Image 1 (cartoon, rainbow, N blue to C red):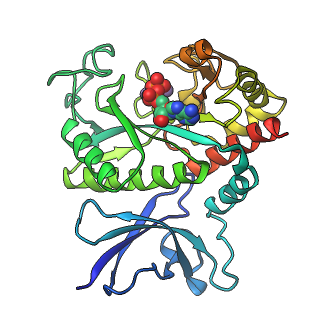
Image 2: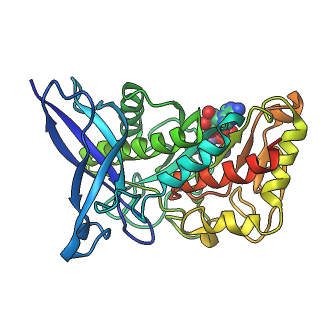
Length: 337
Ligand code: ADP
Ligand code: MN
Ligand code: MN
Ligand code: MN
């Protein structure tokens, strides 16, 4: 019997890439995923007269939607002539930085927030006007507080069945907004799994006629934006509070806040206003339990004198390869022997 492999890649759409995928039917005896290709002129990755791009499988897992022997296959995009990474391939440099610092055993847990949309408005919102103000929705229960739970449950089950390191989910502060967390796993793995989990989210929401959006500020005004808080530690940080402080100082060193924020996704000015549990995007500060800081040190970490830090600045639409690479590079450089 043949089986289906869903090849998934990240396209060249600007300012934010989209996920693309297509199905390959493979013979039973094909165990190693073959290289494949696609028309880059339809994904903003190549000109029409030289349109071929290469798909190189880099991460695979069971396909929980199709079941059976079917697989999901996440790919890097390469240029055919040289077989070098395509300019839209942010994974290749993420792998390089991880290889450089992997003796520090970097671990990430990413909190992916997102918003369901139906007929042009957040799921559960009235046809005209607004729902009751924020307050009861975060971790709420009940039909007035919650919308989209059946999709969230289906997505969580799918992530577990795919073998992803999903560590939890919760309803968020704005009605129709949710979160899932992936981690703790290493620099490259967390980014691979976030992309596969996003694919599953879009794909499952599609069956409900709903769109899942990672827009950083889907509704202007007094409504929470959507972030991708990025929790991070190294072996030293998991042993000493000095290393925790060194990591925070490294992220705040001259030029670093600007470099990081410029690469943390689109919509920073709208989301990082200093309100709604954010620090203003022109400010850098870290603090214990401080949800208005750029970097939060969780209270248990301050109590235990070791653990991890939370970078609260990445937007929901960030590229996890870029964010995980930058944090690994900045912090591990400072903590190197
Ligand atoms: P919050 O209180 O900010 O909502 P969450 O519980 O949503 O926090 O997310 C915390 C994340 O931190 C989880 O993804 C978890 O896997 C991750 N995490 C826990 N310990 C570590 C660690 N030592 N290093 C990196 N990430 C960690
Ligand atoms: Mn969270
Ligand atoms: Mn959250
Ligand atoms: Mn958080």
